Structures are given as structure tokens and as C-alpha cells.
Length: 453
Length: 114
Image (cartoon, rainbow over all chains, first blue to last red; front, side, top):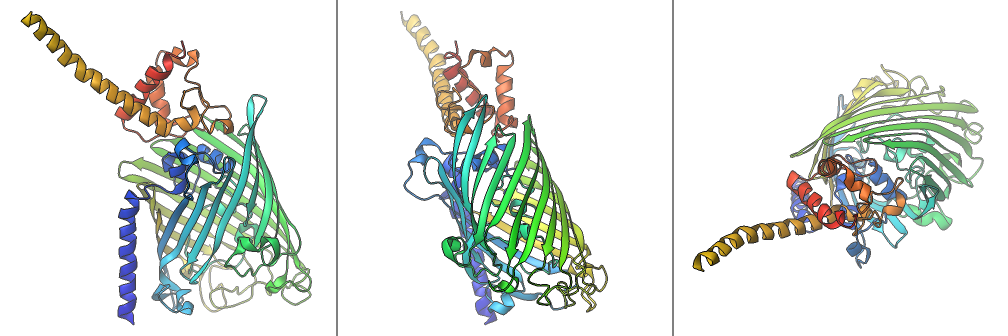
């Protein structure tokens, strides 16, 4: 059995190597680059971070196209492959030496080696003159499942507005902030990839990934003079009804009740090689506890502030991003049912990261330094003692640093070494779970190969 | 007569390869411009590319006389291509490619501006 698994690993690795060579010649660039005829560096500093041109490309509905590509008959397809290795400072049997997905499903969820961690097929590009899409179908190697991932279908038009341009558009998407154009909001914020098997802090705001592919929604947005940007969206559960296709392959376990409004407002300024953005965003959602639409839902109100500074002067690239999220949690369903110790709580999170890269002839080299912090009210029922994932003292507080070195080769192949350091995990630095595990025991080394085709 | 013909042949031998090279460079510059610049600045260089409508301020019109009035226009073009400017991205091109684009723009658009 082990020999068969190793043969499969070898076959997978050989296939990746072949794709690296073959794709170089046949599918020379991912679909956006092919559509526009531009290098990846036109839209990205180090993807997925966007440049000013890339932000405009997204605002315009992914429709910029050369004349020859505008009449193409074939769909704008691209592909992605992520392979990773995760190591904990003190493993204590948490992660296994196997290779996901070649283990059985239960083992794969905690295998150190994921090959792939994810493999995705993208439909990404122009559909008509003013309609475009970014849609991702992903195979999850640790769960051994295929499902629709981030999806953003948008229609956009531009109009003269005085001496400037007004871009207006509509988006159908399945994750709040997937439609955003800055790297300071959750979906496109740092870290852009992380371990699928390492222990993670118990608490996070709902807007920080909690509704991804659990809801579907319709939004409208406008951008005036590359100065003022505003967007509003309304989501509903993707568990059933008209929005069900936006969670294809997913069995939503976060079921919202009624409409989920989302808002976004940002001021930005571009001058010479510098760009700066400051903004706010938020949402309000009622969520049924327990993943079923029965009884009384809990209520969450998230409001956040964000900012981004970017300096692009080739060969130097610098980006500074940050976001602060405040969440009011009203446990209207969980508290009476004994799932929460308090009728209401608050949760605050802060993330900031700085990245510097140098574009050399051998590739783009650099890295990130990130800081994260989550603080909230103590609630011993929400955050109960449990080995590895629980909290001894009922506190959700976690904080630490993320250091990442990245090498981008030929603009399409990204290799990263990421180290996450925890000062505090689920409420404490020592014996945080009540079973003797320290926060530092979860310090994680994460090796990633992220290939685009 | 023979010397004259020989003289003409020598001149021709000197001119023709350069003309051929110039034509090649112009073709190269035209192709590079088509690949990298047409999206925003348009085939005619007038800033009316397919992506024009999205940008504030709009892409530069290379057929406008004031664009060519800079004394250091060649260096300005090279620096802007290399470093980008505002929403315009930077392009990773070797110096000879940037020169080819500059030569093409001068050949194709400067006359149109006058």
C-alpha cells in the first residue's frame, strides 16, 4: 500500500513538472494575461495583490481585451495547483506523516503533506463587451471534495463625469469582500494562502471568511475618478433557493436568515508611483446556530476600517495593508439554548502586514511581515476547554506574527516559506487548552508551491 | 562609369542594410506597441484604446503636439515605460525594446501631432 502511495506521489510530481514545461509553451499565460496581452506584472505586484491597473481591470468587469482576443471562441480558462507541507513546533500526534489525498479521508484532514492542497480551474475573463467573470472550481486535497470557490460575475460600464470617469457595475458573488479591489479586506488579504491542517485560533469575525461560499448575493458599485469607491450588496443563504448554485458542491453549515446587507466605502489616491487607500466596510447577518434553519438565529453586526499603501518603482515593490474589524454578537438563539454563557459578546480583530519585493532577472524575491490580533469577551461555553482547539479560560484572545519569504519565478510559479508565531492562542500563552498545550506549540512552518497555468 | 557604378553600389551597400535594420526595428517597435500599449493608448496613439474609458486621468494622447514638446522626450518615454506612471503599469523590457517602442512612436505619432 505504501509503495502504491509513493508511486502516486511520484506520478503527481512528474505530472506537475510536465505541466510546468508544457504549460510554458502551450498555455503560456493565465487567462487574464492572455486576454489583455499584458504581462502579469501589469495587474499584479506579487499576485494576488493588484496594481492600480489591475484594480481598474477588475472594476471594468475583467473585460479589457485585445482586438484578437475579443472575438475568441474558446472560454477564458486558467488553472492553479497548490502543494504544501506543514510542520508544527510540537506536533504531539496532531499531524500525520501521510500525503493527502492519498490517505483515507480522516487521515487526509491532518496530513502534513498536501499534494494537492488545492487544485483549481478558473473561468476568468471577458464574456461580452461589458460582462466578465472570475469563477473558481476547486478540488480540496485534504477534504477530497470538489466545490465552487470564489466567484464574482460582474457587469460594468464607464461614463464621463465632468473631467473624470465614473465606473458603475453590478456583481453576483458568493463571498463578502470577494468583489473588493484592495488587499486590505478579508478575501484578498494576507496571508494569501495558509496551511489547511495546522491548528487555527477559534474565533474570527463573520466577515473574515465566515460566509465564504455559504451565501450568494447581488451588489452594485461605483468608482469615480479613481478617488471614491462605494459598493452595497445583499446576500442570502446559499443553502437553498436562487442562490444555491453559488455554493455548488458545498453543503453550507452557516445558514443565514433573511437578507445580509454588506457595505463598502473607500477613498483612494494615486500619485506618481504611490497609491493610498482608506476605507470602511461591514455587514449585518442573522445566523442560525447549529447549522440548521430552526429556532431563533443569532445576530452579528460587523464594521471595519482598512487602509493600504503601495509603492511601485520597478524593481522595487512595497505594500502596507491593515484592517480592524469590530463585531457585535447577540446570541439570541445560542444563549437560551445553552450554547453561549453571555447574551451578547464583542470580538475585535486587527491585521497588518508589510511586504517588500525586488524584481530581479532570476525572478521576484521578497517577503512579508504580518501581525494579527483577536480579542473578545470571555465566554466559557463558546470557547470551552478541548484538546488543541479549545480554551482553558473561555477567552478567544489570540495574537502573533507571520513571516513569509516568497520567490516568484516566470511570473506564474510562486514558492513560499511561511512561519506563524503565536504569542497567545485561544486565551493564553501557557496551557491554553487546559490539556497542557502552549500557544508556541502551534508555531507553524508552512512550505507552499503555488503554480498558475 | 565603372567607378561611378562601384561608388553607387558601395553607397547602396551602406544604406540598404541600415534601411532594412530600420524597417525591422520599426516592425519590432510596432509589434511591441501593439502588445503593450494599444490596450490603453490605442492603435492610433490617441489615447482611445479599449481600456480608455476606465481611467482618470485618461491615457496620454501621443498625437497631441504638447506631448512632443518636451526636450527630453525620448528619456521621458523610456522612464515611463520602465517605471510606470499613475495607473499605467511598469513594463519589464530590455533597453533595446524600449528604444524600439520609442522609435515607433516617434515615427508613427509625432508627425500626426504636427
